[in-house]
Each structure stands twice: as structure tokens, then as C-alpha cells.
Length: 418
Image (cartoon, rainbow, N blue to C red; front, side):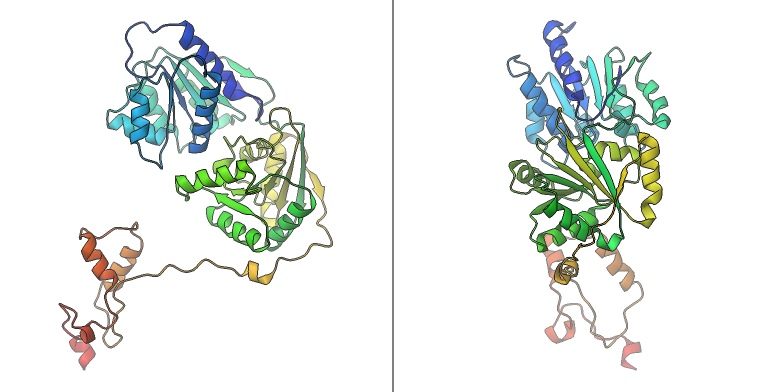
């Protein structure tokens, strides 16, 4: 079955409740060691949220579930699976890791569900999905749910399903009527000024701000904090602990503004989100539908405000073409005040690079600069096969080895002594 409905209308319940019901009322044909239901999600946050829904809906059923995703240790997750979890909620990457280690058995899967199916079936996920689909029994119930389903992805659905029934509650890619949408045409350099102004003047109690890049999210948080607006960022470069703390602060009200990339466009279900700001318009128009769907959930109303510079006009047209609706244009306030220069010029400290920098007297030997560049691109902790102590010694090497009796130093090259 392929289910399509607007964001915030209860798609999780649409597959979680029937799954729980069937697992309770239909016993497995034979002894099953592993889980009987598998739900795949594109992000860690969505996987955790789906797990919470299963915990709530199945509180009195006695059915156990496990949630597995990357970024954290796999030990507790493996233990949860082995404890008799009937339902497994997972992201593709960590699931494949456990499959390769033979720590999870998918031969007993009866119900196979993909949430946010359009994202799961794009070019970044299709190969892992195909691999997982081959590991589950061919005879199964397959369900795909999403708020959008682009035409170019529809043919991939038929690889996973046989004679699928499509249930569309509302037109594909439609937005919730209870969301008040508007857009400001403004220069890129003034977007942060306008955002700070609107956060203060609109009475936004809890807001999500979307940016195009991870660096842009961090930079915007620094600007807002310097302006006295409590905010935090969440994106793919953040450690899982940082992402969890940011969401907990946002849910708890300690941080009223959450700046995020599209990692939060799907699966972020927080009560009371009053405003969604598109600081940068998304590159894919379908992402706009998911972004603004973070507000006006479960029957509530909300506000979605977008900023559009000259280079983003084409993206705005694509969004309006997809949603078949024109977004209201709003003039930029005449009393817009620029953020303090100190906030705009704030920069993160540059990382300190260790290692031998040369004495300046002789020329670098051929290849030394290339080796330095290679070391700078390696992951933190890489030692070129040396031990940790050797790596630490290199990092603490004096700038002038000859003056400190550095072992192995032969003095400047002959060319340098001429």
C-alpha cells in the first residue's frame, strides 16, 4: 500500500496501529527468532520519534520494540533486539551494519514499512533499501507513506511492491490550509536582520528556522545569540548527543528557536511550534511542503514565513508550481534595524594546526607541502599508521628542531647553505 497525506495528519498512527493489531491477532507460522515488523526512516530523529509512537500505542500490548540508528554505540541497540523485540525501527545505515555483523535476523519480517518514502527512495537511499528488501521475505505486507511522491520516484515503488494500492487523503504535495504562508523579497545580507525583527515582533513562541547549509545554520545561531535571542542548531555534522540536547532544549522551552537544515524537515514533531521560517529556500520544492509541515500539526494552526533573494526566485516559482498556490508577498519593514556589527563580524576561532613548520632558512623538500595537505584532510586522530605517542610527538615538534636537539635533524639542505 502507498499512503499519501499532508504532514501532521497522523501517518505514523496509520501504519503503527494496524501493525500492532496484526502482530497481536496473527501468530507467526513458525518459531521466529527476530523481529516481525520492520520500519525504516531516513533520519535518526524520525526513527526515535516513531519508536516513541510505538511505545505509546502499544503500552499495554506486551509487544517490545527496538530503535536502531547510527551516531551512538550499537551495544544497547543489539541488546534491545535480542531481548525479543517484535518491532524494529531503523535507519538504513545502522541496520546494514548490524546485518553485516549478523546481529539482526530479518527472515521473520511480516510487515515492511518505509516512512517518508520519497526521501527513502531517492538516489542516496535506493541501494541500501534494495539490499534490505532482499533480506526480508518476499511474502510480506509492504507499506510506504509520505506527504510527497515525485513522479520520477514512483517507478521505484514498483520494485518493492506488487500491485500496490494507493490511498491519497489529499492531493500530493498539498499544504495544510491552516498554515498562513508569506514571503519577503530581501537581499541575502539582510535576512538575519529580518529574522531577528520578526522573532521579536510576531510573538513567535516556538520557531524552527531552516537554512540551506550546515555552516549557515551555525553562523545564523551565532548572530541570533549575539542579538540576545536564545537559539541552537541541529544538522548532520552535530554529534548525536548535541542533536539530542538541542531537541530537548527546544521541546522543553529553554531554546525557543531551533535553526536546522533539512534533517529536521521530516520527523520533527514538537507540540506548539507556532512559526516556521525559511531563511533559505530549499533546492527541492517538495522539501518546502515538509518544512512548513512542522507547524499546524494535529489540527492546530501555524505561520510559515520565507525569505527570497534574487538568486532564489526560480526556487520560489518551483514551490508555487508544485503546491499550485501563490504565496503572499509581504513588503520588508521600513524600520528594519541591522544587527550589531559585532554580531555580524563574529567568527569561529580558526583551528590550530600542529606539526613542523620549517625553520625558514632552508627550502622545503619536494613533497613536504603535499604531505602536510594530506595530513590536514585526514580525520581527527589519524596517524599515518604511527602510534598515538608518535602522533603527539609530531604535533609538539618545535619550530626550530636544530636548536632543541631534535632527533634526526641534519641541518639545512646543501642548497640552503650556499
